[in-house]
Length: 366
Image 1 (cartoon, rainbow, N blue to C red):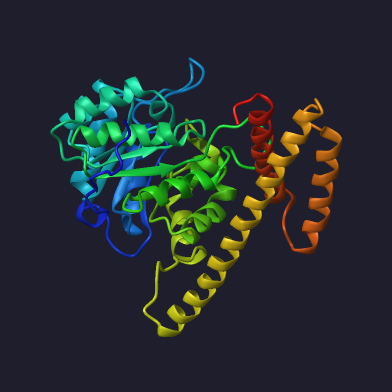
Image 2: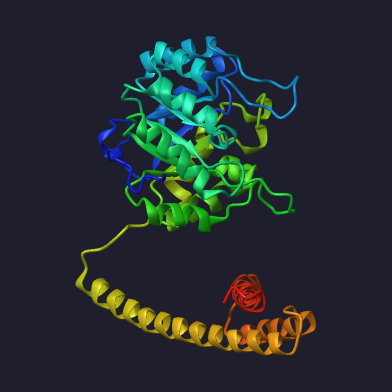
């Protein structure tokens, strides 16, 4: 059974992040050498980063690729803590990884997308973390399965993990899109609406797959009100052993954070703002009520059509009729500034509901 609530300690009490916002976790995709780790950490510390990330164990699709330096890299992270005073974080994918991280004093861990998709591994990690006070971030699963994401959070919560947050890095897709992963922001927004207290990071490096997209994705995530960013940064990305195209130098990251993105406020104490926003929201409420009334009326007519088709032994799906109707909707929608994607999503959902109603009538369920 799903837990309705997660007991979350606010991120401001983790002792890891300080103003200015956003909260940033930065560092190389992979810890490759002690020199690379220390040089990158030095550059990030000088620009004000407090939490340093580096992959120690790297899950790769094909064997023979660089799969991380393993536990020896944790000693380099310890050196980062000692010499630069940074908190350090890395990805874990099993009980042994957790044990090594706890042994070496890692400050925070995260679960990767492939791990989140495997409840057995998530439970193994949750059991290994039981009784600890370490913050844990959970990346979304590789596929757009919100319940799978929530299930991973629930397993960790039941193990007593209260410093809990999430990372949105997009979803795998076969479609050709400009990003490496499909953002599907609506999934992240739905998770935020269910658990508004949950600290929320976005990983523009993995989501975009290219440094060219990091700024726009970072700004989009801040526009949506998410608190943090996890961005890959390497002292020399051109020679990186993994994900070279999506890493920024510390100097480039500084330019991004201080000159190129704008942090949005969650609210304002301005009386003028509150008065105007309340008025606009009231108008939205009225429109939403009209939409619900219209949808209810449409479904009642769909039931009548279903009954008429049943009486006359007519098939439910009338493809030519639907194509004609959708074409009219798309054409009319242009006049209202509505995109084809939005209209396709909305009206296909309405059509599917209508078909389901008619199917129930014809099959005798209703």
